[in-house]
Amino acid sequence: MMVRADSKFSDVSQLVAAARAKPGTLTFGTSGVGSTEHIATTRFMMATGIDMVHVPYKGTAPAITDLIGGSIDLIFVPVPTSLPHIQSGKLRALAVSTLARSSSLPDVPTLNEAGIKNFEALTWIGLLGPAGLQNDIVKKLNNALNDAFKQDDGAAQLHKLGLDVAVGTAPEFKAFIAEDSENYAKIVKAAGIPKQ
Image (cartoon, rainbow, N blue to C red):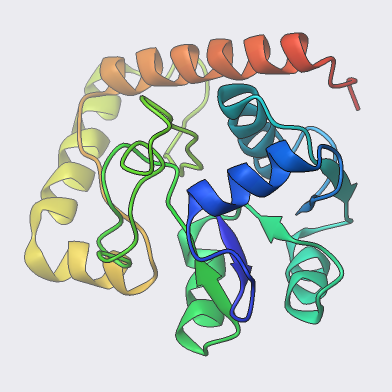
């Protein structure tokens, strides 16, 4: 969750208090209707009982540009996307939407730490293959990736990009995708987000 560097909001509680005091006045940008940013912010509004105005863009870059320029109040974007803007001093992270702090932003609290209990909205990257891929090939690829991520230099390179690494088995990843998809579907339905 990012705001401009000169934003009047220095933490999540201030932003939530302002949104509650004047519903529908704060604006949030996303890369479009139904995007991960849209779902994450919708989940945040549902968890806090606030109402903000959605400003969909055709991509994350124009949304960030307008945030820096002062046209919108906040945006949820993945750490790798936001890190250069935070490091340049143009944007400030109020919180991360993972259950654990980001290794790239260790001083930034989680939304859970900011008082929004059990809040998690992830943007993730994974390796997928065609349906019916032989199990021995899946295991070989999975083991090779896990080994690479467990090595200090492999994980360090990803951390430099703002990525945190999670290792596991293919069945665990499959179960994660199913659970994540179900959670997103519930939010989309509850919020009435139209199909695109």
